[in-house]
Image (cartoon, rainbow, N blue to C red; front, side):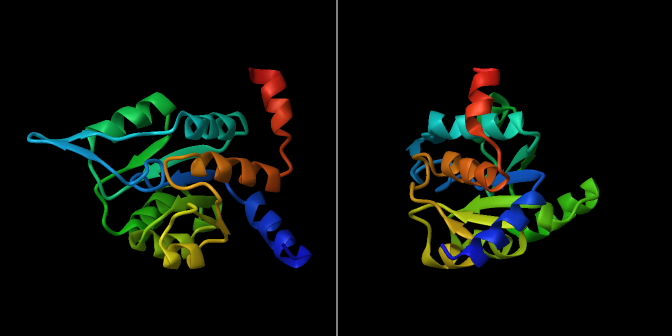
Length: 179
């Protein structure tokens, strides 16, 4: 990566106070198991869960933003101690604009990771945008950084670590002091 581009990412990273992520295709592999009663199971990576832990140790708050309204995702949010859960929104940028207004912050304080067409506007507008490795090409083009890992297989963890590295955080210190 050219030095000028890296310096730009470092500057953007310094403003980040929140890291939001999409769910389906980002924290999951995009698949879902259905029973006659409806949605039954989603698969989440435990490695991605460690990304939330790392961010929390550095004072970065975390959130989910999704078009779904799923009890499965709600349970995952509780397990990960997510600070904000915005669900059931088909207009993610507008929902995030409302959130930052309520918090007294700006979109430049938000990092976001997504994978699909409904994530493109937010990826472009937020302070630092990440796309999962198997994201739609338009999401990748809108993002500042594209992860190597696909959704549901460590992409969020990769993005979280990339953010912390850009912020000059020594992840080894987190391990030494907290694990």
